[in-house]
Image (cartoon, rainbow, N blue to C red; front, top):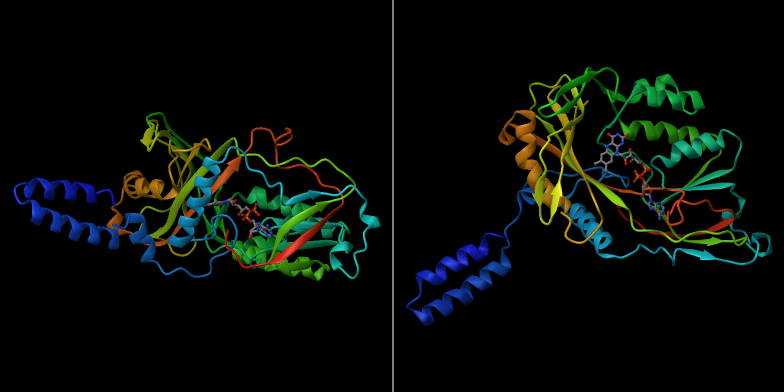
Length: 375
Ligand SMILES: Cc1cc2nc3c(=O)[nH]c(=O)nc-3n(C[C@H](O)[C@H](O)[C@H](O)COP(=O)(O)OP(=O)(O)OC[C@H]3O[C@@H](n4cnc5c(N)ncnc54)[C@H](O)[C@@H]3O)c2cc1C
């Protein structure tokens, strides 16, 4: 799109002495311009990849349309002064026992976990302690195709809690790699062992967790979004807050890397870069992927404030197509892009602070709405 005004300017100079012809040409060009806006490199690459099996959770959507929707959401966060979920959480001054719930099965749970990706691990831990637990997930409860990179030590904590077996871990492990680099451009590398050195299939791990959770009597409400929360017993619940900062991440899983034995836990190039109005420092991660010996996941991420003028994910991807090949020592043309991955992580300085959206509820009733949305 940015190239069009340049072409337009040239044609005006060229037709300087032919006013009428010039007007006609301008009209024709204007017409053409509005019909065929120029696609970004990101759009071209993403629309060439067939997208299957998108999951609802973070980093689980790979299509260009969903990227545009997430960029719109991110722009809205930047523009708003505060994020008020006020209409979602409603206070009731009475006690829950005063309310006639009829046959509503919601009333019978000790805990309802909203959101199923990591939620199912929490829910399974709680149900194994004897609580009555349900999960409300607005999409299907399934793990994404893109592997989670994680340390075995982290997964063993779930074995200690008693909700995962070592066999489950083996079954879901798609890739193992060592050593793993922490690199700082111009400052040298530090090589570590067993840190973020596994590629785990979220799809497989969450499937086995689903079986465990339901076999313990847990109930999963799929295709139900939590719409409103009614808070009884007059407990304080605070309104939500715009994030203090946001981590923006873009990346790909791509085929064609010849040198694909080790990973980068973190790599930072020392210089900052200006994108739009903002100075950014980019960080990288890179992991061998389980789908093939030349398949590699590379992520580029940065930290920004949530304020107007911040770069969109698509702008970061435009940078990524230049910088990733340079970082990995490869030509983009040598790679087959298997999927494009992106996400935003809101961060809060102090989650116990008055403004934090993460506060404890007491007796609550959830109002579920049936919908099918992708985050
Ligand atoms: C690009 C990217 C790469 C990542 N890579 C890794 C990695 O390699 N390793 C790793 O450990 N982590 C990784 N992560 C972090 C990732 O966020 C977590 O691993 C995991 O997805 C977090 O799970 P979650 O349950 O907190 O959130 P999510 O995965 O976002 O799941 C939230 C769920 O809640 C549901 N939901 C939302 N709102 C409602 C509602 N109102 N009612 C009902 N349901 C609702 C959503 O549908 C979704 O299923 C990555 C994230 C991104 C964005």
